[in-house]
Length: 429
Image 1 (cartoon, rainbow, N blue to C red):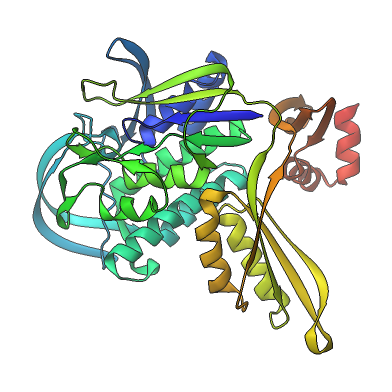
Image 2 (image 1 turned 120 degrees about the vertical axis):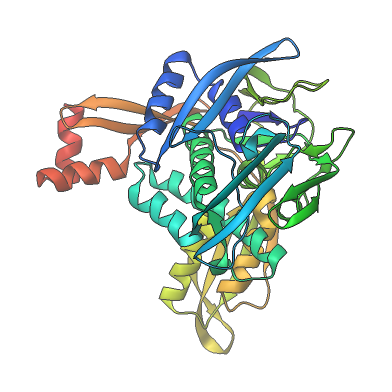
């Protein structure tokens, strides 16, 4: 089974996860990836990649430049959409990096300014991601699922509705870039499971927009509930809310590294120097074909409309559900009803359960723990007279299956006034 193991012994942050996963690609793939993310059109954003050495280990550091400057990600909740204020920001964050970048771990920065701050809400993020970025739909879903985790945490911590949460504009672009990069890399690598070590969150306190906060920061602590975490001698915030949300969304289980045949190792470096290498390590390999464990949640309803069930299904997929399907059933009092079944990773289960209760009429949910066996999947790009077309290739257990991406086929068919069958025939010829 294709597996990624993440060693988060020095915490986790968006840029470090990006760099670690980037190193798992071939040299050509890395160049293509950087070109791809720099052409996405994230407002004012550019990625830069450079080698970095920590404790004698060579890895990669990824910088996100916003309008030519590597800025601090200020993911602090604001109660107003746009407001003018004169203030001094004197952030003294101990994270692990020396530069102005929240994902960097350890940055000290102070700046005086008197201008209008623009803050973006979750709906603005979704407008950027879904309306302007050239990404596969599943990657857009992953990006918004990660942001939903951050928004839910900020909503819980500050005691306000999610639609009242607003992020500093510069920090938003920085964060969108890192979250998008990690989601796109996960799509390219297509692991069947992601296992992560217990997460080192750091210790002490960190000064943020709301004052002096304990480490882990409240939003990070909320996101990482039920996840094995620990502190230590290093003073500072080693795991950011964005890093925590990315782990929570993609990691299927937390624990020790399993027996695996490793094919690639990546090191995503921070800037700060410690007695331990300041990095996230990612290992790509094969853990055999023993299958992975998923939770199957089921509920029966007889008082939900088709529209309500459709909305629930879309919401669950956006939150990371592996599969959602319905079956018509007969219920008590001779009422027709619907069996709704949801397959989810253990790490996403609590979030999925909350969403089911919020968006359905059920009074109870049943759980079964199952093992699933899947073919190893990858995406290939085929050059055709219509341009590049993506093809899904699945292999394992002595079989290989290939299927062209439906979104690409439907786009070509629409643009050329053809049927999908005609497009397939021309491509195959």
